Image (cartoon, rainbow, N blue to C red; front, side):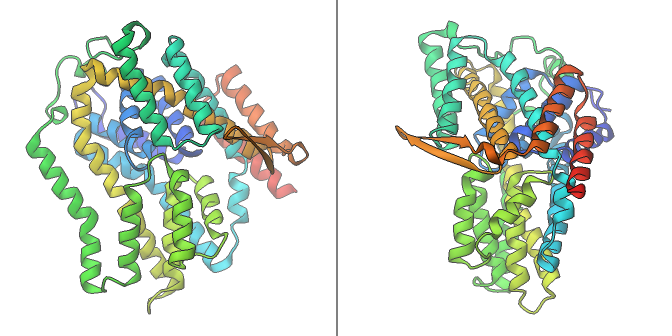
Length: 449
């Protein structure tokens, strides 16, 4: 039994629970993790959770999957990180593979869409709740409030690239600490972390796996790069550099290192390349794949799995089309997520060591404030796209202002969202019963109309 008293089996059950509930994109997934790990289980403190999240938001790839990998690594070393990160992806992989088979073979996913109809409005309530809780703990003064508002405006109205928002927030936090330290709420390693089992243990001494090691860093880099790029090299040597699988391995490996800001930031590029350059998808199919990713658990970047499946299904090269598509889905998922483990296992020990660095933590505090703005922008985005079928856009002074078309309002989605908000905020009902009830109501409604 580890010193913190959390058994590996207990952790696995929690990681699987989080994975099965990981709907709603990064904001919803992080909200669920926060609710379970910080509020319910009290395994990790608010400060350490945000510190880890800030680091993950600076990395390419899905931040929610990297965050659960980080916390799994903190609890149970490398094996804990591998299990947590893999389980987070597994339900979505299985779900999208099944939907891809249905799509390619029957072009019908209506039953599944009915099942998940009620989940989106309920996830909106979870996101709003997370924004309220995190905002209450992070926005301690005028500067942090200003950073959060600026991040919301930049992302929602001006479509500023996500990495620029995060970097700007970090710079404001860093410079603000230099000019007016009293305006920056910095997380100090010496401050007492409350309500965190892991934090209480780490305060008594740093475990061996949390200490930075140059030799271990080299070993981790060598192993992860071999696992990441080795299969592509084998494919190139056996099937040739122009083979579909080789091309997909190279393309999606490149995508894996440029996905700053989550799936939406890179989907336009992937769609253009998959349709126009490679001819893997027909126009409009990328939206169908995104719809699958949005209504199944796991990171939205799992839509890449659908792209790989459809490409190999149509160009099976002598294999049975469904088998070719399944192999391509595995390859695409592999090269997309192996780099995520590299970033965490390589960088997390150094990030943990730097928790007491005032300058770094000032920058991290700026990012924490920006996270509130990010959550708020995603919450508003959810409201507009879930409750209304169509939106108009007004352009003024460089800003793009989405306006709902009130005649396209969806009363059922609105009612489920309001009910979920009341359940969580007023009656303190848990996430699982709220999501299950919402899904059941949504499915009954869809099947009845």
